[in-house]
Length: 58
Image 1 (cartoon, rainbow, N blue to C red):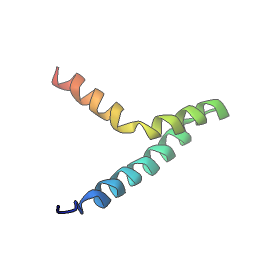
Image 2 (image 1 turned 90 degrees about the horizontal axis):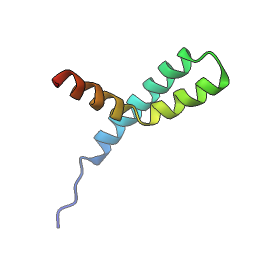
Image 3 (image 1 turned 45 degrees about the horizontal axis):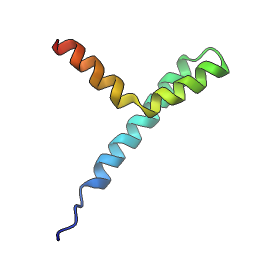
Image 4 (image 1 turned 120 degrees about the vertical axis):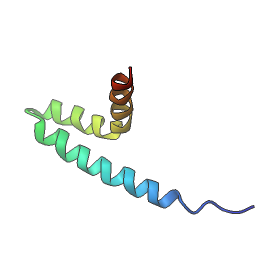
């Protein structure tokens, strides 16, 4: 069986996206509670992106 070696690059892309999304959402926060919600949004940012893409495609 040949091991898959491409996993690290996708993890790095997700990690960089997570950090960027966390910084963006936390900067937009006006209170501690909205900062926590921003952090949680940063965890699931790919789901938001795919949802918006499907909305555009109709």
